[in-house]
Amino acid sequence: MKQQATPYLSFDGQATEALAYYSEVFEGEVVEKQTFGEADFPTPPEAENRILHSRFKKGELVFMVSDTFPGQPVTEGGHVALVLELASEVEIMTLYDRLKEKGTVLMELQDTFWDAKYAKIKDPFGVTWDLNFSKENR
Image 1 (tube, rainbow, N blue to C red):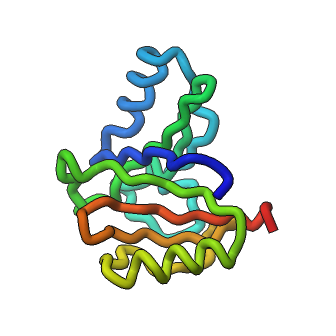
Image 2 (tube, rainbow, N blue to C red):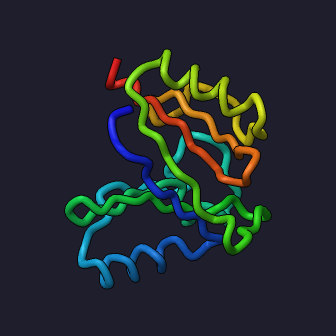
């Protein structure tokens, strides 16, 4: 693994407001941001301005923020996932296989439009793990 787990916060249409709030509170900045409308897949008009992915940074503090797709409500307390940035394809496949053995696959391991291999799995204790291997690390 390249680093520690990164928190990923999910919102139901409030990600933009949350990012503004966190920028003020922590005096940091949004270093990445993409809306559903900017992505290369079909998006209903009501989702175009929702945040698909963003990364907040202040020194060593890093977390990611996104909105859910319309119709996929967020359950308070279940809106945090841990992202693992992995160093190799072997590592992501190994962790994916281990986690899915007793967990629930929320998103199959796949190539993504952000040029990474990615999967999302909820472990048997209810913790959601986002596994990410950026192709730039190959």
